[in-house]
Image 1 (cartoon, one colour):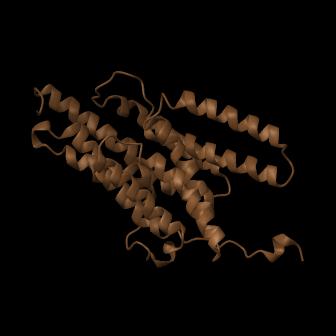
Image 2 (image 1 turned 45 degrees about the vertical axis):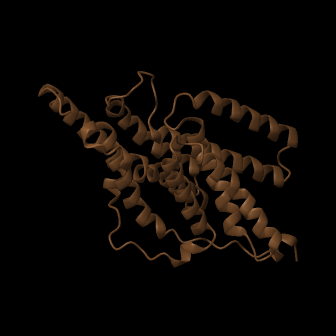
Image 3 (image 1 turned 60 degrees about the horizontal axis):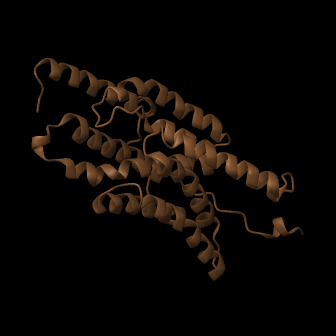
Amino acid sequence: MTLQAAMPAARHPSSAWTGWGQWLALATMTLDHLTRYILPNAWDLGWAGSSLGRIAFPLFAAMVAWHGLFNTRNPLRYARRILVIGLVAQLPYMLMPRASDAFILNVCFTLAAGLAWGAWLRAQADRYRRGERKGHWLALGAAASLAIWALLGEWVEYGHEGLLLIPLFMVAMHHLNRAGDTLGERLLATAAAVPLLLVAGQMNASDMAKSFTVATCLAVLLLAAGADRLTPRVPTAMPRRLWLTWYPGHFALMALWLWWAGGLGGIG
């Protein structure tokens, strides 16, 4: 019997939690954007965006990483689908009022690039373990990908930290899902989660925003560690068309509202 055959197969985790995650991600994202772009400053609702609104991005990143790791045979094709949504959303996204005039690509570009990077790194590591890739070529490829990360991070929403989130989620989820009962395996899985939490803690300015981002990441890591088996299926599944069109659609509606309200002399 070979060593590979003797090792227990990794448990395929349940994705039932992502049904709840979809509704929560859309709700918190929309709340964040409404408080940031639409509602008058006089309402003083910035706290909502700095708390509940900070759940959306790490939750989107976690679901993309989860599906890319456990549920799709072609992560790059999955990344391309996310990229198409980003291309459609870019124009209405650019119409949102901002403090800076710098050109920024919307969050779908961050998610697509992060998934592509994470999938590529996993593929290279697998080839190295199988003896199909020399160590120096692996190091060279990793260095080149870091150079691309350094450049791309200046152009995408959530920047360098946002690009790191999906690859780090994939590493942590992989180890947590495969961890056995021995102390060494548990310690290794815990160590794999630390970089993700450190990066998540650097993504926002306020302590409240950091807390919500880190707490979201922790919740998903617990799901990867086995809590996914305790999650019931969502009573009402997210309609696929709604899931695919909400991001560009809600930006388009907000752009129309801002144009109409501006024509009436503003709402603030």
